[in-house]
Image (cartoon, rainbow, N blue to C red; front, side):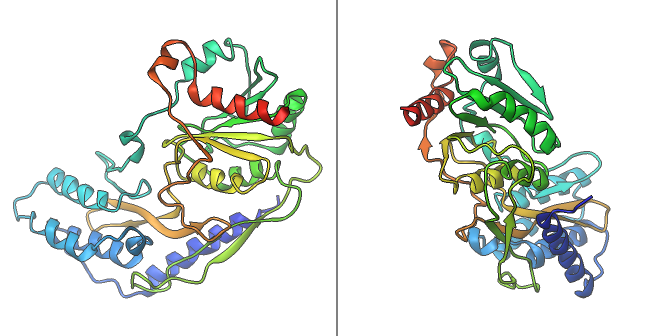
Length: 340
């Protein structure tokens, strides 16, 4: 089976991160509250990718949180303190993982959801749709194709996409709904994007840490996607629906699709999450997962804080009460205007 180039680049960068952490002299931390705290802070200090981009004073954060430690602190209290410290990074890819809990920073909890599956199923799809590889698809009443991809964890194959695009071929345009899609595998992003490009295309670049300093970063390595071969290409107008829950691999998908001339992004800014995650272990067995390799878009921009839509709009309570999806209605109107 052929390994795609992006997969190779991502694997190589992950190995580079492992090698960097292995060859760097790591101090021996005591397995107590202070040792585990210092281990966590140092791992992040030397390997996290976005300190300067997010303007986080990590030394100040250490001073503030370490002052809250005490010899009698419980394991649960230490976990909560360390989890709160990691939230200072405002990074959904950064988690402290223990057997009893996982700390997390979910930016989309602070914003309107802008998505109600029931409204779409009942009032647009009439509970009549097809499903393949985790993709729900149908042709709406305005002869507009609709696909909802709930997670990039769900593997998609080019044969499955052929079936979907063949069914949607009579539609005048296509809506790809990735609202509240929390991400998954970048190889699925590559497979899907390949159906919308006609030539080898620069889609972004990746960096990795080269040393323990916050600015010790490699030059960006460009990566490219190839168009799918011997399979259906969809080249009609496309609208992508996104919200703040469109995170990680979905953020990457939206940033790539936004550069295509036939694509319009409608909804809210995506949830971000543009760093490839890496995991390290603390003395007590807890793991910390964090962003170690920044991914940039084709213009060299970091999209850690999200990708802005071309058309910004929120769901209204009035539309929800009437069984309407404000964002979906807007997307349909965008495609109908392109049809004229």
